[in-house]
Length: 84
Image (cartoon, rainbow, N blue to C red; front, side, top):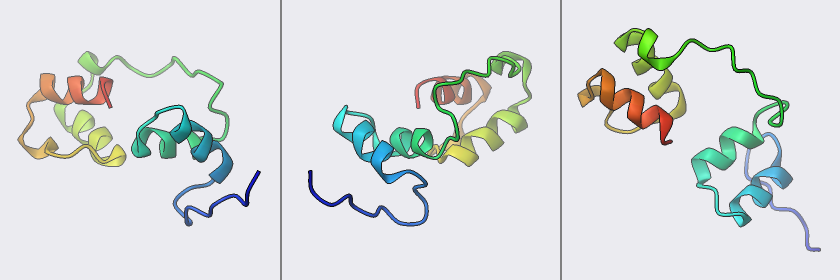
């Protein structure tokens, strides 16, 4: 195996990031998983998207970098969050 590439300070676990990219994950999704402390552990305690306010959904979309969020209504934000 060759030397592992350094993906910069925004990627916490370069090896995990590279493995996820090789499996076909998008750069955004691979980065999010690679930066998670324990990606195998599921939380499942978050409030359902439908129960959150549009402002809360917008902030979540902003945190994960969804483009075009300012023009989305609540249902579009939910769809974008579920499919990102």
